[in-house]
Image (cartoon, rainbow, N blue to C red; front, side):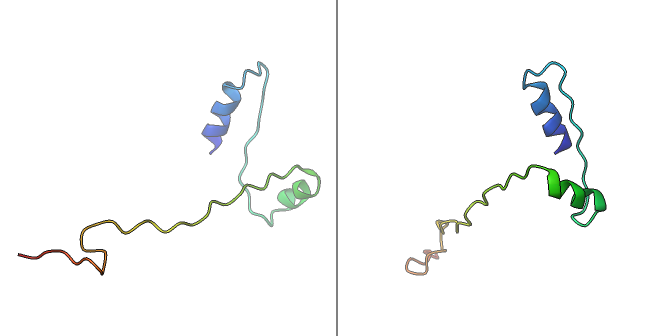
Length: 67
């Protein structure tokens, strides 16, 4: 994740861009402090979709032909 963020900054075109990346728990005092004043981006969660059952023998209405 940190490597991807670094590469995004490199390709952004900002000449003197700097960014720090850190990973901490939600209960860390620094995280609590940043949550009060920082910007938050809520990302949409993708919908859970069930994969279609297309393999041979997976459709109970059409069982496989056994020899």
